[in-house]
Length: 294
Image (cartoon, rainbow, N blue to C red):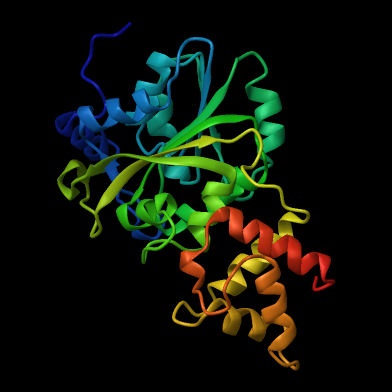
């Protein structure tokens, strides 16, 4: 193995960028991490070893990719920016277990990718410094497609990480919290200062680990309808659950039937959506479904 300086050091990052004449694209949310300590925390949180694989989204110039290759049996890195491909080919040359795929992860057939790339590993985790402008669509795609994942360990905007991990009752808790917690167990690993990036982002960052559930923690009779009920319940946060659900499911009827259904689900009509637990939303959606409201 080469003893040359890690890609992630500030000096080497700047040298690679300058040598290739690389210019950051704001539209792609490119912020390269230059802190060994944070990178090590990200990789450690994924629990990788030489029997496991890692999928990285947006490798940039390969700082995290290199760390992943030192721990995992196989690393697949998906990069949307064609300008980075020759840089990655050069800097990752010492690691034959890395396969760089040029593409948009939101458009890729991930099930086919997993079948082709990770057939010889015991488990796979997604590990990435995600572009902040597409964090939620990427994470929901990874979770909704029910891929054979162990963990998703990502650097994202701190505010979004806090919403994903939020418990009922607070201002951070919402439909994103419920969706993420339905599919996974979220855990904040660390917060990350602006100063460890080139260029520095305008927002605070955090590393979050989503441990993917094999089965959801609640039983819902119709998953799509469950999420419709959750979205409708949070349509206007200041409104009661009764008012939000009436707008969506009973626009031309009186309130009496809706309130009967809420009471049947054990939920006071005067409550707000942010006070309901995942279990209560499951009961509510099943109750509405059984009443023929789909």
